[in-house]
Length: 517
Image (cartoon, rainbow, N blue to C red; front, side, top):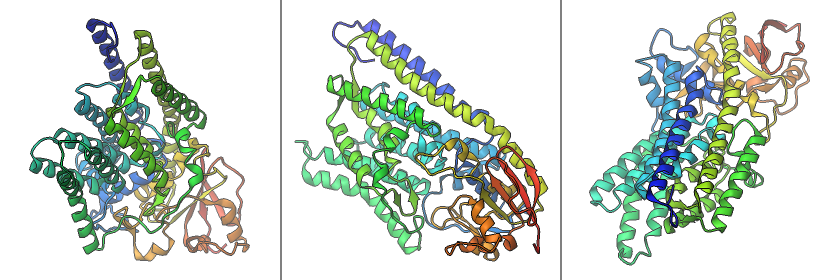
């Protein structure tokens, strides 16, 4: 903690030791959910795991017959490049989980390194990183973004470390990180570029830095990214699908929804308490942003306001700015509380927020071990090579107001692509994002990015009462698919003459589709 007034160096050193010890303990327990759960209960995670199986088994006798691997020069490939290599040494499941753990380690250590480079000590960044370790984008399972953001923190720290050094070394480091971030996740590259661009802009008014030097530094910063985009254009690479959408009504909501991905109440209470505490500290003058931090704070705020919610087919782009700012800004601010009592109270408060979030994560993830095991067991009742449709028995709502504790089951049936060599239309196969695509025979049925189909719609189609805008992939679902998973609490068989019950669990029902019905 920072000394103030007549506080003795010995007392300050003792307080810092306590804070570092608390930080170390919190960091250790914060990684427990990933270590204790074979399949972390994150919305997108089972879908990513299913794709890792396909990539790892491509070209082997166990390769899935419905999918093919198609690499191209596009970003968002962090886990797609690393996990199959790790799977040479361990199971695909463990390799994917190790990638998630590595992503979390990059987030925490990157935030710590960035603060150490700026201040020469660890103070605020570690607690901010742990508070946001299971924030909404991460608990949804945006694992490539999480990995890329952690890598971006390291890249920003290294760049700042070399900021006053020889320009060739700075250019080399920037080039390496730009290339790595482009491969890992495009939006993380954007965060890296925006942060360092704002940093360089904040130096323009420095009397010792001529404008031409500042312009040259900005040009050198942008050059590697421009070269990569040029190569992407020449090789017909893409960045996801077309589509840009703004949902301005959600922008005031996200800051209160961000801290916890599973509990709206806990997220709102802890987020509001944290914002009030920061505003109070700023008004009292004990929390201060350095000049570069002011540039960054204004830049992130403007970026959050103007960036679309959906950009290049990537959803929740604006939401991702919030954890990025929360991880970067602590390195550019100082907190000097007036007494040991205030410092210990602040330490207890942020520790409480971290532990509340962690307790909720464990409360959700641990029970899902049985649910995922039941889902995997049900795959043994499916003929290998079958086509499987996924429906939903209820209306879970849409983020940010939905009960996300049920969402980790959303993509669990996609694991059938491994356990039953099956085709599941919901597997992520979007060009520009994933190097896996459905083969020609089933491509018309694939949904590159989408969730379960409402069971009421499936019933209407089967009883010849479909709405006019039925998607092509389910227009004749009772003829195109062999099995149907209906997610949600078990309910009565809606089509007993067409569907035969094979398995029932607390969170799903598996049906076999009778041909000729």
